[in-house]
Image 1 (cartoon, rainbow, N blue to C red):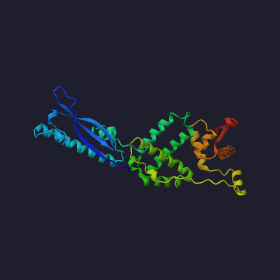
Image 2 (cartoon, one colour):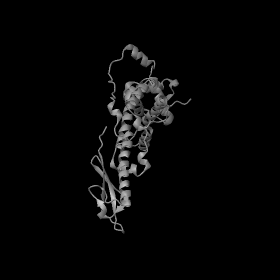
Image 3 (cartoon, rainbow, N blue to C red):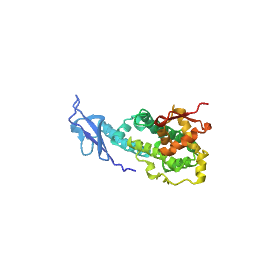
Image 4 (spheres, rainbow, N blue to C red):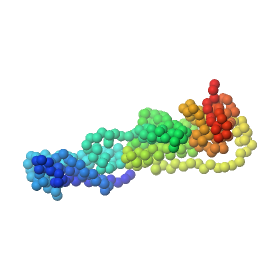
Length: 305
């Protein structure tokens, strides 16, 4: 986790006097070398300010009130820093200013699904331009997996970003392998998307670090080998992976058609393997997969019943 060093300093802006000849007392917050200034709302004559002590001179009632306020303000800044750190925020001078001036948006805790929705809303506008429909479908599908896992393990609808830790990631991985019966390479795709979302959260200062960085996410090497007679017979008899079929059908329920490239995006298969698998399904009416067009214009659709 990143180390934080915050300093609070009070000073008098003598160049800005009001009509009564009083100068404003400003506070500066410096965090990791970055500083921000803003007014405390208090004013005093320049002659009454003690620069070294950062306080009003004397023991008058007004001096004691202002000095007491400055002490409370300093304590409040440090207290807010502690609260924000405990919630997993990346501390900045600007964030501390917003926190102590009661700007609620600065302290609204973001959740995993908040970040997912932000990401998907932006990407949805790019579908058909820089984002393929199948790629966007994977984003939404991963979101449904998040919801299902959180509900089953935590009996909640969502989790705060600060609650996403190594235990969550390990549990989600086990959920994909076990309950969803995914292969390691399919799991890797969803875990990498989780890592991407949390990197986005770090970039937006929602959290200070990404816990997925401590979790190794690797694909299994795919060995190219010749098929034996039994494996060839299975292909001829259309012994195809049902999870990929269900994924394709779910995609087609939400989209008018699917291209070969879309199917490669959904499954991770190479074009040759994907094309062969789709041909097998088209030959079996019970799979519900059909096609239109030929060659490079071929698209895949749900079979009409």
